[in-house]
Image 1 (spheres, protein in one colour):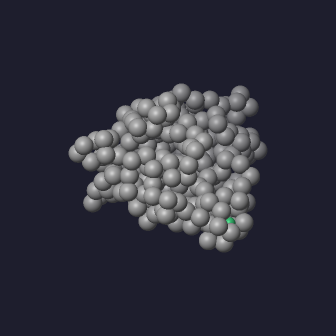
Image 2 (image 1 turned 120 degrees about the vertical axis):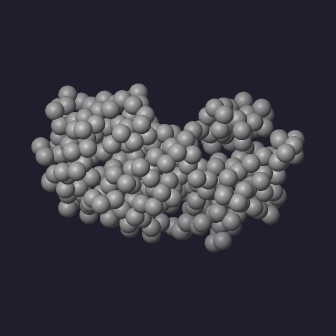
Image 3 (image 1 turned 45 degrees about the horizontal axis):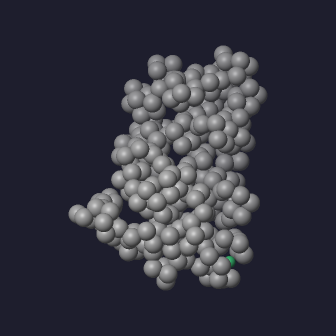
Length: 290
Ligand SMILES: [Zn+2]
């Protein structure tokens, strides 16, 4: 911990690479009690047990599809994270020259107060919709529509934004939304879909492209200096976006340090062992002790 602390303090720049594990550490779990609390009806009907599987389920109607998705969006995008993990991280880097590259789509960095111009969300945002075709490269804020869908199903949105079941529990919860709430593209009329990268229909809008440019600029300015690659909770699903580039860039620069914090998957190739610190522990625990 002392080593990491002094490395971060003495770095000229810090590139944070954040994966799903960071949000899991903040309490945004996709299975277990949090899943069952809000999706018990879907679990019973379809037999899946987590929000990854539920998100890929081919629902027969758009009304049911949006009943499912509005819950997933609301819970992970508009509800505050249970633990202040992102806030702790911000405290650590806010006075430094930092940038964030993340595959997370839950907006937690913005909610915690990170500077928007220092973030690059490569895989989209739960808070945005796009045309499913897509006929044009624009994205649309979905918060108001999602809140309507949530209320129409019978959920209660509390004053602090929290989501609760009605007193009668799932008895009064609907698994569909009214047809008039199903979103359609304002240009071609096709159904809207999530702005999440899962295939080549993902829309990279103006904001996405600007962020990509800023990320490139940050790398060009800093990759040959005293840079720290701080990797948090990046798993094996998409190592090509954060993990492998971080390893390669560390290898290419003897002044670079790679710090990996990941419960269960804190590993590093032998070639950069001497430039690396791996911590196999919960990210929140580690950030608190820094
Ligand atoms: Zn369209």
